[in-house]
Image (cartoon, rainbow, N blue to C red; front, top):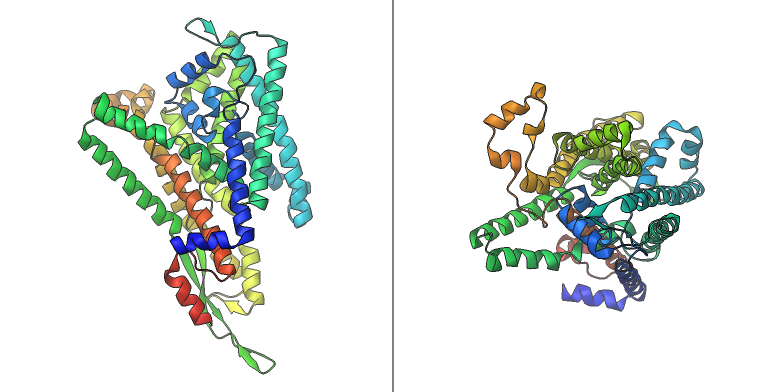
Length: 468
């Protein structure tokens, strides 16, 4: 490991990429402490502390705590991700966008430009909703805004929109000139900075307030390690499709005639399906910020209460969206027809499967099956913190759906949770582990490309010796 870290410092290009990534992540963290002008920061932080065990807590995690303090980066990367989702969905129904997607690099650049402009629009829309809601809301009779009015609304919209656009720029710069996926690394940074506070909170609950016993702490740590192992197992899991290459003569050399495999990752989308699902779940809440009072306002408030964090409809919708976006994101990043065509051009075939269309259909069928497993895995991991804190509130269902029956027959810990704020589990741990693994793999690929030892020496050295 030390030799590998030393090798990183010996490669100027890789060293510059890593330092550039760290520098931009530091800029992102600095911006997370610049407050939005005109707000009562103390009252807003108190409000978010009271609502931390809700959807606001999850959004705060994705923004690195910026939402809690309502800083210039409060919107985080959610507008950008929502814009990506909308454009990808429009690609299916819009022939123009579908044509652009097939034009190669030029088409992708145009779609990226559309995504950026849509990000600006969505950020302005969400900022306007937040500004209007801040003017209306109070906490213990104290207003959240010092000087409400059109000036505050314009300032908030411009500030939060500029912050969201700047975050988008930071993520794109990290992806193109740094190491790893920029958007994922920014979320990773926001989660990691909260780990010391979570550790201090655990210590206080066990040794200061004694809310938990040391035995409970030990169980939590064992549970956390088990989840880490579970995540690593699925993130490293792959389905290997055997590929046979026919012998062919090129000049005086006989090439081919070897057997290899095509690896298909079980979870090809990583944590992106969860991020997509959260971004869509926040959109109805944003619309609700604009409409308060009146018959329409009461109807929308009642409708949104069904999607409150921890409610059965929210949990079901969250799980279904994760599974949907697991398949949706796979369709974006993987094209079975293109892969099958490349295999055919190289003289390869899957034993028992005809090259061309049959091979593409077979790959698509395999990908669909393993992605169902990936979707269930992601939904399970994402819902672990919710279950431990709030349980599965099936007793909140209407009587005709069996709410009263669940209330009288199901145990209390299952319906109401264990009241344990499991910061180290679920989505946060999935993002930390997944992003760390992807980044290490990219660094290792850079090292191996330059003939240095990677982090995973076993197997890598053997492969290079075999090649030599």
